Amino acid sequence: MSGYSSVGQSAVYEDGDQRNLKKSEVPGRPRYEEGVEHSHLPNDSKDQRSIANRLGNEERKLSRKEYEDPETRAAKKDPTLPATLHGNEPSKGAKVDAELQAEEEEYLKKKGK
Image (cartoon, rainbow, N blue to C red; front, side, top):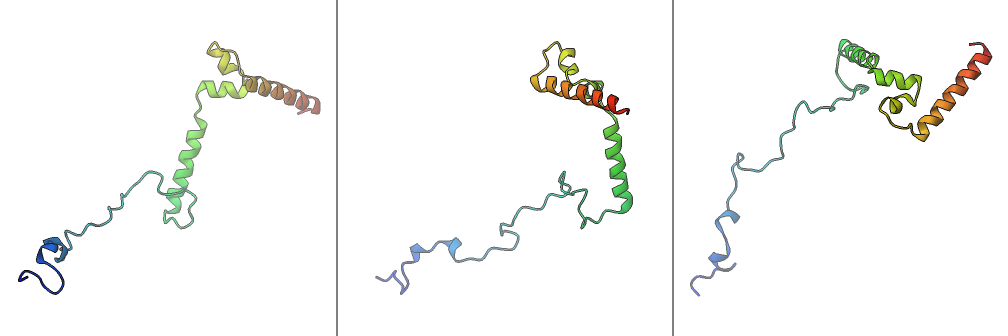
């Protein structure tokens, strides 16, 4: 019984249980990744972007909206056109949209606009 202490055997304790880690060895949370895409909302009132940066962002948005491929422009004129251009039958929704568009144009012509 010479190997026993008042709290238990010395073999119960391991080296790592009783020592303190250095600050460099302490596991920390992962670093915040800077520059994550979509981390800033354009309408955020607490964002510290300058007025010039906000204006530039809006101008870029407008320039992107102006560019449309020919198929998108054609779809605005006739909803069934993209399907027929690809050799397919237009969907039921496209046919309904075309009918509604024709009715609205007829209504506007009657109204004189």
